[in-house]
Image (cartoon, rainbow, N blue to C red; front, side, top):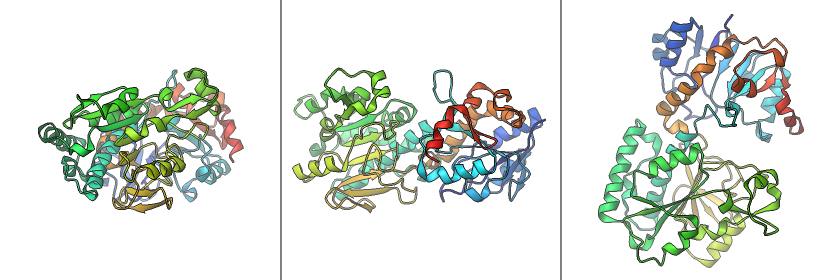
Length: 435
């Protein structure tokens, strides 16, 4: 027998408008599988209550009748109910301290927890994600940011035509504007003093792919990281072109003992490596940080390095960091916290080590919105629901009262089951060390 499914109202952020299932997907679940679905009423969700009602769902003020509850972001501790199944981005697999109280509450109430981030295939590739849309929105916001920052420096550039991603009705509309900006750069170029205009991407996964998709709408030439330093004195470099480079692990870190870089060794023994990224930073105009990181790995930008850089140059080439990775005090150490959509950027002063909200002030501008896909809520929700759909019915039909090894779930979902009846499952026992 299938459990009643609930779709929760997102309440972690004021501007969180995404949903894990759209009215179209809800309608199909109801018509094809006779699935009972309750939608928690929401005045801000990108798809309104009436659209879900037309799809056949029931609209209610809470989800007390539901045994299986789908959300997007973390859920407040007081909203968990005894022995229910929750599916959302829990952000606990790195032992994130700020979410340990939430996890403890779920353990106390004998809840089941399925984390989208851990729904992966046999090769450990994620199957359900917002990563591409984080990259899309992050690149739009970073191009908008560089236009505003250059205006503060006294430059009028085509980037001023670009708005923050959340101010477009659709991804299509944003791409149309950026394509026009690209045409203007081809025709008129960028200020000669900014040449070569370079953008570097750390990482090559879904986030980076999304960000590069936006950049491809501009006149772009890709160069190897090793060739960045040569561009400045090259007669072939042009102010009508943006130079792109993608950094892989071997460009970011090197073994402390000087032996050759080995990718498997890097992942197995990250403490044996130091960052070498500072040899590229002085040659970048924009840094798009799109890579996975945790504190086992070296940082790519440190506070100490930025102070040294600003001691050497009053205004370094690096203008904007688009920190899509958005780990507080993480790979980009100056990202002290994720920023909200309504206050998306700050300028970090390397001398005072203080951030100043907005586009003005001495230092480096950082865009670090930590719910970037919600700036493109309709597009990102549709893509997410498309990927999630096939797993919804099996989750609703699973008998979570059975022992863990007897629960019938698709392999990717079973792998993502972090808590079963309030107990950490075998793959996630290590999280006990953080509780």
